[in-house]
Image 1 (cartoon, rainbow, N blue to C red):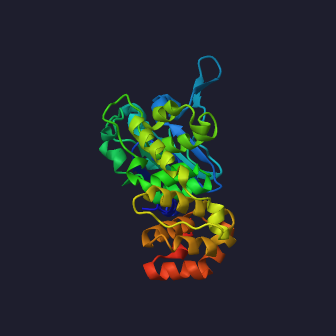
Image 2 (tube, helix red, strand yellow):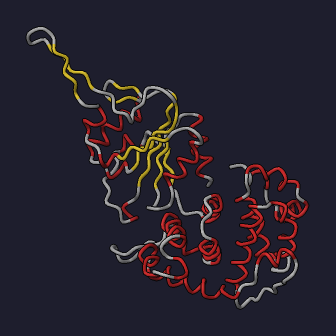
Amino acid sequence: MDLVKTISDFRSINQPLLLFGPPGVGKSQMVAQAAGKDPVIDCRLSMLDPVDLRGMPMINRGKECDATVNWARPDFIPADGQGILLLDELNTAPPAVQNAALQLVLDRRCGPHKLGDGWYIVAACNKASHKAHVNQISAPLRNRFVILDVEPDLSRWTKWAFERKIDQTVLGFLNWKPDALYNMPKDEHAPFPTPRSWALVSYLLKTVCKDGENKDYIAGTVGAAAAGEYYAYVDEIQHMPDVDKLLDGTETYLHDPRKPSITYAIVVNLVYKTVRKIEKVDRAAQVVSGFGEEFESLFFSNLLQGAKDDDKPELIINRNVRTWTQKHGYRADTALVY
């Protein structure tokens, strides 16, 4: 499921969505991507009391004992403009706060405050099976939403990762071992790999873990098992050929079925370089053509996912891209629409 497109579809008809997904899967980031240039107000309901939704009381004193109370509008219930209001951690909020949120979702108002017509409501939650401390969501509140389960998706995360310049070794490792993208731990106190924690690993590799230093930091981010597999992969690809030389034809590489990790690393590097210089696509396609159909598919699918907007028209009409997409029934036009 393309969650970004799904959110956009339901936003177009103003139908609230409730997203259930494990921690670190990127729910809030996908909401931000669906919002485009519009703002997202991230309202963490677990941090609020019911009165916070209604607003702080303001006493208007009249003559003698004649006084009234107005309620100051919370800044997360805007009256004007347009965007997405994300009610995050909905089921970690206490029942009284959920009841206050019910009016907001049902009537688009809370107490005297009406949510502006340009604002779309999305809620996000973890499940108890995700080892999160949650409260049950009442049936009336659940019934106001379309409820969707969000699962980790390597292809969608890879597209995002290319755009964010995630470290090439992280991308190569996860394409080589997709199961490592997300894995809940048996020990409730242990770190575990998620799309969010792998993005953090990329940042650590560029800052405090350069040149193989501080490997325990990586283990503390994705867990010892995932970190061990990652570093085994890194050690194995140390002997990979120079990808620039492969592209200019001064070096060749014959895929070794006993060392698929090296070929995965080469393909991800080729995608990285082609995304940044689209004119390299034909030469890169020629290189991967000798690796077998599996790696050709890895190259073209990731290239189509990671391409820059300005390069998409050129990619669609490229001879090598068209040949591969026609052979595999792959819709390049839909893959390139984000």
